[in-house]
Image (cartoon, rainbow, N blue to C red; front, side, top):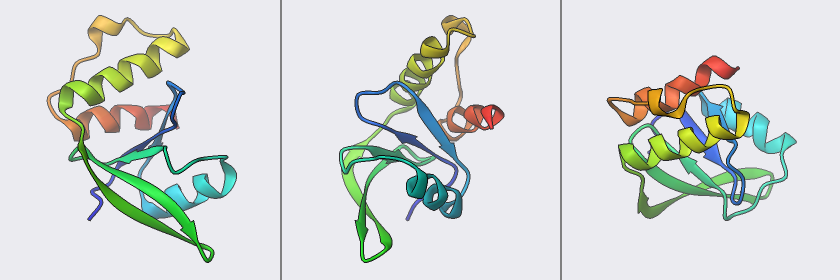
Amino acid sequence: MILWPCIFKLEGDSELIYLDSERHLKTELDDLIWYKTDWLIDSNGHCFTILAKGGEYIFEAEEKRFSLAAVTQLIQEHEFAKAEMCLTKIQFSSIQQAIESLSQEL
């Protein structure tokens, strides 16, 4: 089961997309060019791949799980690409808090 909010990580790109709900994800997926190698990372650090089948999206849980340090690293890379924030100031106490920090970008 996916714990929202989540982030969507496109392979080969440091940009992260904050997603507060499955409905929001489906809207983004309809508008994006994405691949099955991209990851949905939930607030527990669980990783999912997404497949499109018959007009529906299927979420497949992967064995990979992101730690707080790994999610923080992704967010640091995301912020570095935007060059708007000092990276050393990016620290979180939980994965959910890390993901929710991106909600301010909406």
